Amino acid sequence: MANPILYIATGSAPLSSQFQETLDMLLTGAAFGQPTILWLTEASLSQLQRAPSDALAQLPDFGVRCVTDSIAPVAPVPVETLDSQSLLRLRDQCTQVVVF
Image (spheres, one colour):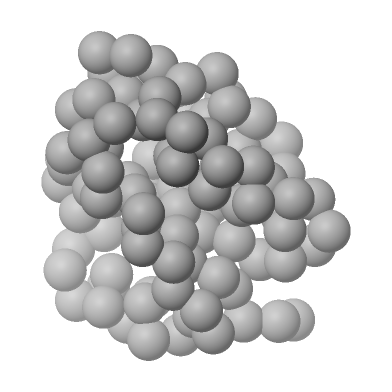
């Protein structure tokens, strides 16, 4: 199994064109079997609660694992809460990290 790609959503503008382009890239890779993880930071989760993105609802269908470093709120996609050590180990295991 290939090492996963980790995408870290740090931005607070989930409806921006950059966010949407990155989600498209993430979904395309996942659709072709690339193990993919999306780390939603507290800032991005907060914004997504105010302005949900329909694209996020598709993530589980493509096998994308979503994680966060804060308490997972009600989100448009299942989010797994990890402690800081687990997130660091996860980041170290990934072949590529994309921050947006």
